[in-house]
Image 1 (cartoon, rainbow over the protein chains, first blue to last red):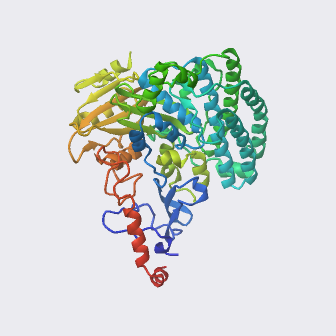
Image 2: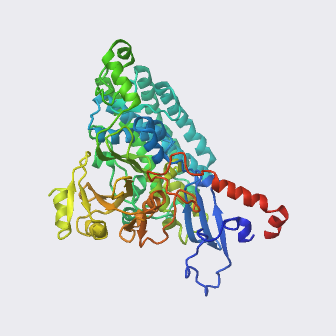
Image 3: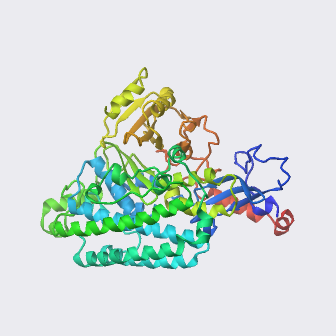
Length: 423
Length: 173
């Protein structure tokens, strides 16, 4: 199989185009085992790349001598779209960033705007958000677990985790009316109150879920194959994580205790009891273990939130600031004042001039929105700090000089979603 | 010691102004020529261990047109700092910080891809999200949202594909 057949460069116009480059000196020519170099393009349709990621690899035998991820296949110009659509209409687009945790993205964006508008969210609104964010985190971690396991041969895990995910979908369906892409968070709170029935269902689910995690662990934690394919693979030190801007579970697996929910609390996370799991080695196995424990802690938070929601029953879940928050429909029909507010918000909701950054601890790491306003209804700039992009960036660091079969464990354990990486 | 005091101590001798953004993050503005040195001192002197993002804002048609934004996080002190610098001109340049923070590499590539800001000293600076052959910089304010010839690259590719006969295809493999 020649290079041309693999289809990298032969139909690209020459000149400005970056072709397959190879760092000289990367191969020891005197090594008697050194064979012919092979270039391989993994993706963008490869199932183990979890989306449209392409990884260019140069192999010496089975050892990867050069690795370069190529992103952008899912680039939809979200930041430009935000500038065109305006602050309010961009909410639906945030769902499509990391599509495994739409509500978490909604919350992150809403919080950045609230930080810009200096608007505070009522307590019940914050509690509902925390519940949604933790359910989203569990959903995203379940996908991580299922897809990584199926890539490493444990097909059963995929069905186990998707079963549980399906139940969360039903919960969200009951609350928001959608399974995916919910768009239920608004500036100043959430769109609607969480009713008793959904809360009870959520509690029932939370109570049974820890046993399911035990089942997952029974399948994987002591499993010889899982152990061999993850232990000591893709080791990241704490210092490397900091230098390469890695956050979230990947950072914690390397032994650094840093969680924005604990260290820089938002949405009232300081009111809930939970632990931040950390790893010791920073390999793929630690990243797995950290995520498993994070799911347990998320359930713990969910149960506390459900208790807290009992206390605030009937309270406000949406701020009353009529510059940013739509008035209730019945008032719009009866009051001229509220009708004007509604009209102003729908047509032209301006945010004050200035800039703000707000980051939350999303399932993949620090998800932040850097928003700059010139005082109009359309942003001057909305930069999305996607944790997944930094995770992709770490791929060459981890894969260099490793065996090709490790790619699957490493890609899986870094955990990224291309919707968010490419934006 | 507040964040801004720590930053001031680390940046002695460099001119900068302190800004007050709405989110309360300590923010300073420096000259673009000093930016590299500022980032170095923030890392070594003020204890900012990690780069959160590198991006730019296009103020077109105002001048100077671009405004760089770097943001850093200190785990030790649990705080953030944002650095701004104005960049002028049709061919904007900014110093790279990848030798200090390797994790800024993709952010800088993205910034180049979207705004056309060239990061001097960045090894392997090329487009990140848009196709390598693309001619425009989409996040500039004078770039229309619907795109400029959005299907040009596809048509070129399709043309080349049609020109290649199946026999040639066979012989190259």
